[in-house]
Image (cartoon, rainbow, N blue to C red; front, side):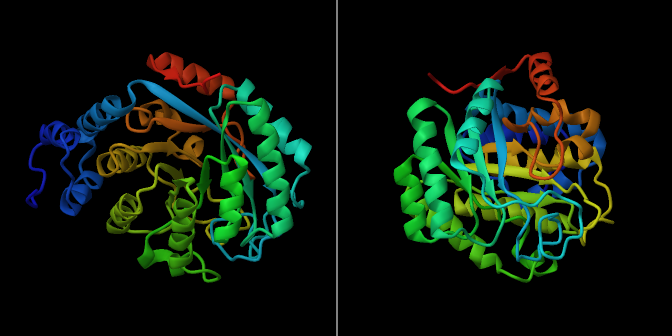
Length: 334
């Protein structure tokens, strides 16, 4: 498809039809979308919704996190309250017992989540930690139809194979930012380390989940690069986080995001990754604020409950938000 720029607002609807038919959006168009005036925002979202509805209807997937291991991390990621450079007053503890992980899965199911995410802090898991997670996954799968997503850091091919054999459906490892911006966010691992981990997950047969954090000083061009990189990686699930600047972290004084810009970012990820699960993730409450419901016209998934070290919106409000939109929760099949 030839390179061109968007000249009129009505072209966003035309482009959505072309994308549904198999077309792609160019880098120039993607940048134009992010930088479009707010007067075009509703048409941009209408186009994103056309794509979302084509592939997912009005279903909303719910995901719930358990912070299975908190703090104690040797990495220096500037956004993270659990990193070695953070002074944020968070709870720190080793990997939770298997029974606690299993109980968390039942809570996820009770809250109508379809995916239960077991998340550990740290650079990489030990084999004994993987043993504990594997045992928990096996027990959960024997009792519960939930999808299980593990997020354990830089895993080896053998560890990935064991998680897959235990029943893990998905593994999350975010790119977090653009390759060109990576060194501004962390120095204790490389961008390629993250790409390699996603590929390890794919080779093991698990569904790859990889996303980003918006609001860490990246340029609009780098936001476009993030969306394109995830398209190239063929990530099945893409969590789009918006920085919640936590006091005590290097990024605590980051500029607050504009909720309208956040909506354009979500639309951008839908236009570039039309068939994928786009999830509004950490920081949605403090960045999208009163515009949270509008995000679901582009995204088809959200996290419910609390995040790793920050509070989320009450789940009852999320359920109500989905109902008020006329959308429907996609619960796990029995």
